[in-house]
Length: 449
Image 1 (cartoon, rainbow, N blue to C red):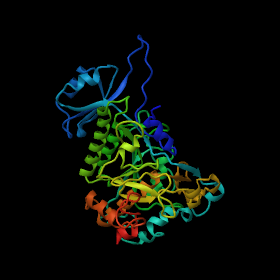
Image 2: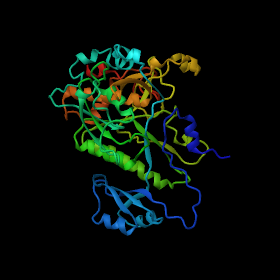
Image 3: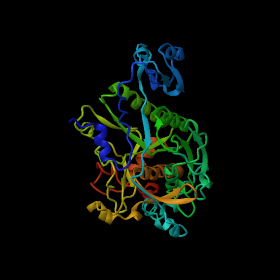
Image 4: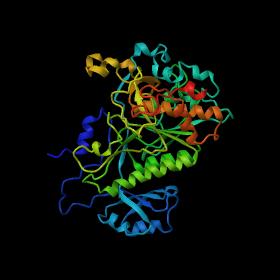
């Protein structure tokens, strides 16, 4: 029996969720109402919409739901089975297809800090923050806390589940929040993922972030459960760029399978192209974009192998050569057992937590050490352990923020920030570049010297 890519990657997943495209619904009754679907339509001009685009959508049988004019795209809803064929007759259209859903990169493992320990020194338990900052040595260097050389706030946008802006370790560094989740106008975190990410970046209290004077802004794209449409994440990224944030952290993603039998290849291409447009839009506006590599212990450099016995290629998305892609290490500076890797697919490595070297070797649950996970803020004023590339990416995002702070807001280009971050990283495996850590394990002290 042919193995399906979706099932193959799900078996590798350690609770990360992927977007290989939903399986088709079995044949509907002849009299059933037409199914309403959500499409992305990308026009050939990457920076604007053609005149009369709305009439074009209507005449093809669709209704415009969201406009991303600066990226030459619209989100459309329709129950017209011929919509895609109709709209692609237009010479102004580059791609059109059913829109995908993206998920947060769910932690591999998570556990709240026990009440008995919660009253103690939380920073003493944050081996990951100590590892990146040289046990706080970077905070004594110019820009090392995230305080800018030109006095302007350095803002890291957290495109995620929101942030608990009332958390005592975060509220002083919370800049603002915006929600892109239909029906949820508040940026308050109802999940915990985004609050943990924000704490790794800029907590300042009983727990600490890599840059305790950086500001964090919530760009909420996920509700309490479930995923987000590609257009909503792209819209959040575009808005963050327009808001002149300095860094964007995206601890989210999935996999696009080209030649999925339930989606034409061109239906997948338009999602990938929209993400690339959004990332490039942000970078052109001076934003350093950081993303997690994923939690499936797979080689991202082999798209054909990722598809298993199926045809076609499977790619990590969103991913771009111009963003900073982050794999995860454990306390022992080993590649975490769940982390994705791959030549040309990883830029740097950062602490994401694992269960200790003994578990790494035996995979025996009796050998698990949860204190080797990453400890940070969670909603309600508490602290929790999590492990995943979601926990690694925000440390690289924070380091990008303090690199910017040392020089001053709007001084360095994203390419310069990326170069400093990469060139200051520690070789932990092969000398120079390798498939596991990219250019190495991030080091805030090196980056600021």
